[in-house]
Length: 487
Ligand code: SF4
Image 1: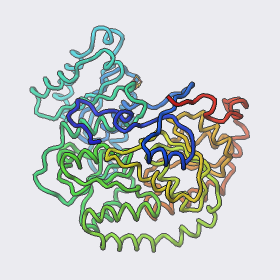
Image 2: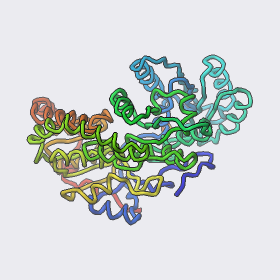
Image 3: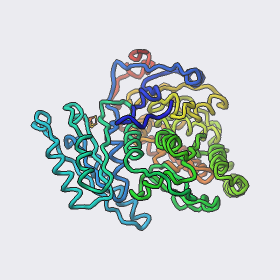
């Protein structure tokens, strides 16, 4: 179903894509269910804290270099602002650019939730614009401002009449969705509607949606060989650059969960092709992804030369370490965009997947296709394995680790990794989204695995002196059977 850009807000993933946050079964089952389009959410009888889409949206907006962000809510909702501002500054320094963005929280209190805070929000917005002269202003709402029905839309229209900069409200109150990535969709929606301009010309640029661009230099070099520059998003981008996204030759994403809304919306509204393949993690991922980009750019011969060079440079070293990684058994717990992709990379290194836990599941993407990584594993995985959907429910992951007793555990959230280590299981934290990027990244990942399985003293010491907060009773339960059911 097409993205509806006429709506005031982005439709949340549960409604738009049928996304779920609770489920348990195996790879074969999940592949069949998403292929038939009949996977259903399973509700938990008990839930630990999850993540909030508001903080997801706020952190992404703060990574733009010359905007102002006002977080309209209680101080607690705004806590992500200061850290994101620091990340933005450091990222700009890394590429020798200035960072001029500011982030404000308006600290709604009990009086505000009774009498409203739209007037103080208006005063703050005016002060922020006049003091900092940002290139755009984003007003991000919260549960408190949404519950009392603050009319931010009207305020934004009023401010637009007074100031000649793009001003957008981003409606991403936490209670609206259990999928925190809905916050990314909320900012993409606001940006497409309020900032991106009609194209004046086509430019030799590819929009590249990623998180922290640690391989910016390497990517810039290999894309230069295809004759195109890269517009990285949103970290280190400027409002002016964002206004020209419609002029790019293509949009690609490091993670399809991250890029689905903006990529499909740019394709739908401006005809900018969005690449829909498995992501560039691992060797097959990189080749498929890079060839896909080259096809759009009509640079397939140039891409093949680059792929051959990369393979030749790294393959012997990867194969050397693969002798040690082959036969290892792994459990992994990651977000929806990386879990199934990373399982494929681990299989390339000869590792057997015992269990995969994914933060949520989008059974389809905005182009109506099923997630390419699940399709790939469904068709090519050498073994079936257990899988569940679990939105950062640590207690489930501990149970899964205990039940499967893997040789190694992988996560993309540091809060998970420590629980494996406390159970004396070596763990690899895939925090950098480029850790397994292409041949180069596959070698880096293989080396990290080798380190983790070779030096075992840290897990041994920590687990020997740790008392886990769960009882033996919990570890004897099948992790979901007791409390999760379809609704
Ligand atoms: S869930 Fe609501 S109250 Fe909690 S941090 Fe998010 S926006 Fe604030």
